[in-house]
Length: 130
Image 1 (spheres, rainbow, N blue to C red):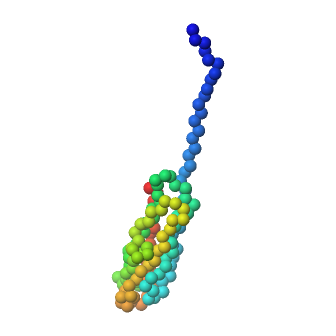
Image 2: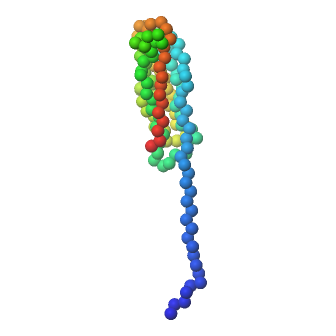
Image 3: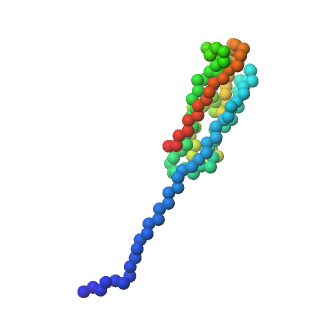
């Protein structure tokens, strides 16, 4: 008959969960001077990021593409949001320090036909984690 072993072992499993964290900075309000064809909006950036492997932070912007006259919204100045030489729609960031410098581009022809008055538009930035 076998003797019971006096050696015993226990297995302990340790588990740690670290939640993803990150900070996204978007441009603040911008004043545009009449006639400016390229206006620096500022940058979109990812900082203090601790992401899961194979995950990214995505930042998109939606806007009408038209500055509207405050007294008559049918009077507009068309613009594009640019990332360098291409129109900006979405940026994908994987680590801290990733950033995109945005500019607002307005053709001279838009300024030439613009009515007097104050113009504005709202840019909506959407941030997602995928």
